[in-house]
Amino acid sequence: GNSVTQMEGPVTLSEEAFLTINCTYTATGYPSLFWYVQYPGEGLQLLLKATKADDKGSNKGFEATYRKETTSFHLEKGSVQVSDSAVYFCALTAGTASKLTFGTGTRLQVTL
Amino acid sequence: DSGVTQTPKHLITATGQRVTLRCSPRSGDLSVYWYQQSLDQGLQFLIQYYNGEERAKGNILERFSAQQFPDLHSELNLSSLELGDSALYFCASSTSSQGQGIGYTFGSGTRLTVV
Image 1 (cartoon, rainbow over the protein chains, first blue to last red):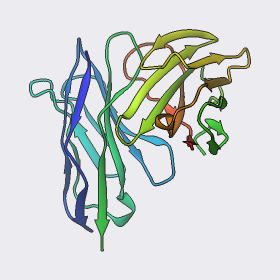
Image 2 (cartoon, rainbow over the protein chains, first blue to last red):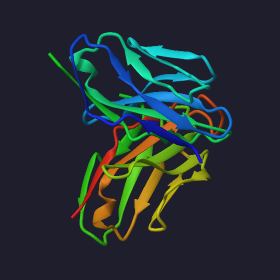
Image 3 (tube, one colour):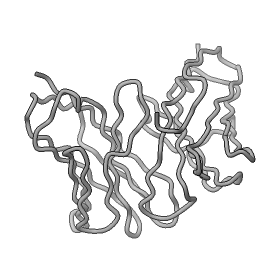
Image 4 (cartoon, rainbow over the protein chains, first blue to last red):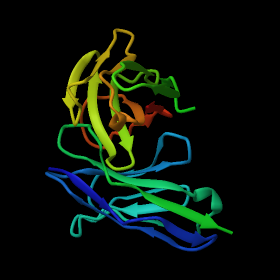
């Protein structure tokens, strides 16, 4: 079956530090890959996505590149802000189904 | 506001009771998905409806059921509640029923506490 593995959190960074959250996947066929973000007390918001190998998704300074050879979709940001503190979920859809399979989430805390 | 509306936001009920959670999808979206988020299980897919018909089923207990009405709103019914059913229940919607690259729009969730 399909699965997503994310690095364990929490990740604590100082403001302006570089962020990487690792995500690897197992899927049948060619999945589409997503990063969602959940701010405290809110639902999940789509942050970025990539639908084929070597695609780079980007939004709000965050980037992730679909790496088929390493089955990875790591999230990066060059300079994090306190407002980026949230839980980040890597997810995929595969085949004809539109059901999302999520990783366990990684909590990011950014301090001044 | 994401456009997906879930009610109620909070619900506290006793074991053995039955509750109904409601979701109105974003305007124009035909698919509705229900997810359960708990500390130990993470985000678990429960069920998907598309234009009134069930399309996919995940880890949904037999005590739980859902439906999507002609106006496209959906309800998730949870019965014979147990302490372990305490969780955040999210609804999401999308325009299509299948295919790659579809991003969902999530509601803000219903927090269910079973005491």
